[in-house]
Image (tube, rainbow, N blue to C red):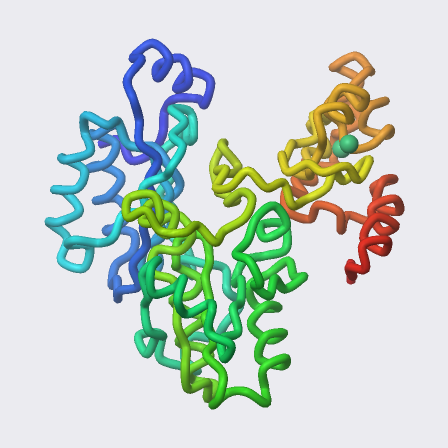
Length: 357
Ligand SMILES: [Zn+2]
Ligand SMILES: [Zn+2]
């Protein structure tokens, strides 16, 4: 029985291309008690592999978190399979706004300690004691309330390119940092303010809302299905869209445009830009925001250092990489100190009155 991928990303991309069939990009999560995670994992892999599902799925004792792509023609069968699993019956599927047949090129179902890297000790609070779920319409009303504090539960590199109007966007790299920062800021308002939070697909708020209730916050709300589901509802129901910019997503697409506003700046020249790019130097691969002009001028590199390296013959590049590994600072962005443009970036932020610490 085959329990792992046997095609390379390149082979898979060729197959998808040849098939020429539409694929849907979907995400879902569920907190649930899973006893034998390995057996569950294998069960999912076999069923989904048969349906030509691709993606990145985390399975843990606390539940499942899945980002995947499904051939449109297999969608019903996929849903039917989910419905055969008690705790996944009618699970909310967040279906992407913009599809990309190449969003995922492998099926990776991984057993993890947690389904989200949250840095929290589960035993300290009850995850099921979560906040009140609100839909897009309720959310729109709620965030106009003067007693509301709207918090973006994502990391800085995500909110940088898009967020809800008037949201607090913590300048953090991890979820854990965010939790502490917000608690500190709102310490005095645990009872009188409405804490309203959102994230990409809802999973982080699920935990954060339970965490804040545990910490004594009385009025905790979360956007059901996150930004992805909000955008669909806004379109379907003709509601006002209060999200500006792009929604950062965790697959090849990197983001979905939600409004035409460009709220971020190129990390190299500071001009308005909101397209993430991976430094083309394989030893670097940093994910950062680059405008089209800098992209051309810098040959898709994050720094002149990387630009010099990619001009070397491939064998020499490989020799340089030896023993160093791929830094893969995908989300460290402007915080990677070794980068020459870091200094410029700091200036840009200072000029805007933002803090980079
Ligand atoms: Zn630029
Ligand atoms: Zn680089």
